[in-house]
Length: 340
Image 1 (cartoon, one colour):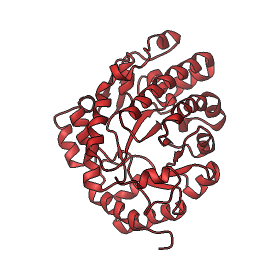
Image 2 (spheres, one colour; image 1 turned 60 degrees about the horizontal axis):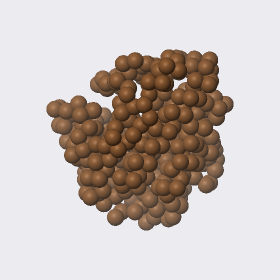
Image 3 (spheres, rainbow, N blue to C red; image 1 turned 30 degrees about the horizontal axis):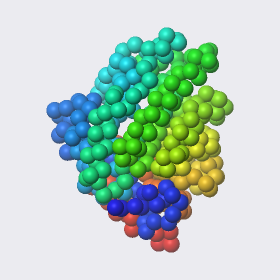
Image 4 (cartoon, rainbow, N blue to C red; image 1 turned 135 degrees about the horizontal axis):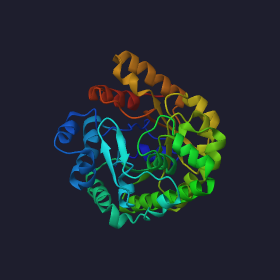
């Protein structure tokens, strides 16, 4: 097995910088678009053979050093009794948003083996097929809470913050419920065969350090602490979280994902040397001519320092990205050396 990704997660020196892409399985690949022409995203997630195929597509085409399970962060919410749909071009829509404790009462504790057995079956298929490590994932409690409270994507998370500030006891109870369910979900993924996990906190950047530390970090830490005994690398990634990187590093994460807004050398001063950094090329750079992509990727690699660094984008692959550019980028990163 190609061990580069796991080697860096362990703090070892690999033969080359490992690289994988968030959203590498999906919108930019013609073979994925062909499947989406006849299947909606939740159907793909619920069908193990199809979810495994989508996960494998970028590994075959791009030669990345890790696969990430194809699914969606709202999948476990369905298993907790939340009625939802994913609207193309919009995102998850929640039928009955949570406004108070009664909404929390309606959430059933997640039983992964019953509620998301198809995810675990997908992992089993993938472990037989893959020659690179498989990353499992879940949505972080704050990001899931925003969807549950707002009813869908929000530009300012106003309702979420109103509950957080105005009813802190209710808020912390919701965080506790979501943290415990996502911990159970991730433990089940590891037991099924995932060799690393990533917690996505897409909307945490709406908070300042004081608010994150008080209202969000305890739940993230609960998940990280709960996974420690599993021995798998634990990654936490958030968007616009440059000012939160030091706190994220305190969560117990082994790897901290960095979006494109914070240079990696700056991020390292905030996280300290103990954690691995992952990132952080601006996804839009991959739409530029190759010479620009190469120069920008080289800058990311230089700032990463050739140590304790997993190359990735600073967010997900954009739909208009040419897969040939991604393949060329993978080869460039593999060939790069600190003294080159």
